[in-house]
Length: 373
Image (cartoon, rainbow, N blue to C red; front, side, top):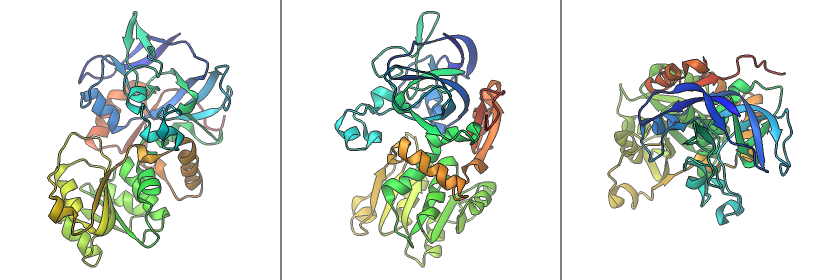
């Protein structure tokens, strides 16, 4: 079937919305999704710019929310009319998936970043030529087809326009804290970078019982929002030295946990120095930057750890409903980071994300959608 989609024709090109893209036929375990909205993530921008080796043309988008239109004969957990959030695809069969660790799926790159469906077939074509996909999803579309494991069912009384970013940015930041760092109540945590991922990590630290929750950024408006969302302290790196400021707030000890979402070399290197004895740094930004680490002076005597975390070590079908419960209880106000844009304004929305003007742009793909219906 023909759909409308935002296509990136080549490395660095702008999004071009076209209505002649052909969507692949459904397979036995597929869902056909009418897209309502999609968040824009910095990973979309990284792929658009060509920071990773991908193919072009490509349809990006991986924070989609929509309504199930059709289901394949092998689908067990969904039916037409269900409201869903879309996330990454884990094969479910490799040793890591069987251990309950789909973010460590041995086929993760092939299934999510190869540009084709898990069976190697084209997800989208245009004039007979393949158009690559992202996350077996490509949510910058009016309709898409995904595997059952891509989808998470959500309550119909919630506003689908707000929920898509739970599938990546918010579950990545919060999951890094809940699933990987697992801070003890009363511990200290700092988050460098107060975008969507960073604020999600910060709120998760608060929920986990951290009594010192430090937000670090250089944009005053973001630091103000961080305070509203639960930060006990903020550090503006335009005004003070990050390491000294963290130490001043922790009686000279440093923080037990630090999540870096910036990927900036200087910030990462300062983050190591801002850790307490036995502290852990989670570096989760999508970046090609490098850092200089002295394993003796930076790590060994201080017993510090640096880890990378993919997608918050999350199981979307478990973690996203948990975040929704926190949201409903007023503990995870992720929607305060969002701003809606019409689908046709995708390039402006992306530019506002890159510049930092908007923390989390959300594209409204179906302007006729009404929450609660």
